[in-house]
Length: 520
Image (cartoon, rainbow, N blue to C red):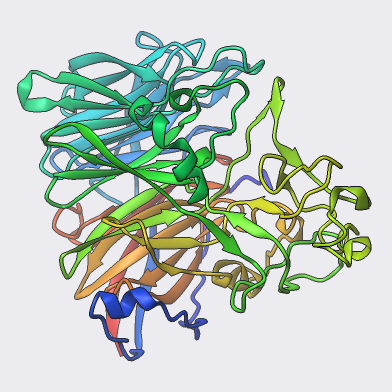
């Protein structure tokens, strides 16, 4: 890892392969029927490439069709000093992106975490120093970069987005604690009403504290050190419905998402995700980095916590389908560390539940797997009766109304990675390919899902025209640790073709791809 790309990568083409089918009872309740497999492929061509610096120099990007500018988050450093800026690129020729100027973030805060564009406006989520202080959402004009609004929001605004109609700007204010875990801000979501002179409302989750027990029974995690309910909630990413009436917010560390009604500015529900059972057929995983076998997919007595990062939503037959990239994230602070490994320590496993614990604790089995201390035990003897690992190594699709899972890619992302030449078995005891970013776009008569895989240095394309029956289409190598993935519709694109823009935080590169629809 940490490699540098000095020139554009060549394109890797792979024919669509047979995926593991996952039947789901939700299909019947939605009145859906299985769609026969089509001989449809998606030809993706890398058009442009630009290197913006070192680690952290290209994280999230946003495109303005009016000015044909791409705005890219840059938190790289020079000589140990933070750049903290937004790079403004000209991509009027997608084959040759060029830097026009930069927007310094230092007058507004310590770092920029996210950007979004709509109707000639650029919104930026900016954290303070320390990050536990309130952050800011600053809105610029995209043409002359004039500041239109500068609002104080919750602590550590991690993601910002416009509603499709442009009337709302929303920020997910993560509210992470400090390293000693002595200061833990409230997690919140801010809603800015553009047409009401950028009027601000910030919502927290204190109203759900009374439901903590019932939500935990369904998979919500509230486990921070001495944290109140509203402090422990950490909003991560936001998606807004096509009609701009509802927002879904991932609560990553809490293993849930929240649904927000935008007209009333009210959090309607917290929808826990539950857990993924790696002992079930189709969920087999390679969970050891010490067995000497790449892609050793086996059933294990382990549960995966979904803990998603990015989220996207699409309507289908009147139902909002919510897509999540199930990255996984552990709380790892000086004052509180939740990670646990059981390597060669049989006393950590209940002998009744795990009669083969002598074998399970070996590094060649589950010994090195990163687990959480916060679930499944410990009992009075310090033993665990259930094991929970970080992330689900998949993307999932959920009914946005009920929170019920409609689809999970199960182990297909890691299986596809094994088929590539660069599979990293060192990730087997961590979170696998680590799905990070999502984008959905319409290409021809198909709806495509693009999933960025941070540890595999790639993104994948799925046909999700029928979201209860996704179909794998292509694996494409990209930059080092893709963080953001952005779809540009052909109608907005500078060259009249739909684009996929991938920004990678480890090598600081932005890569532009053209995706054309082909029916053979």
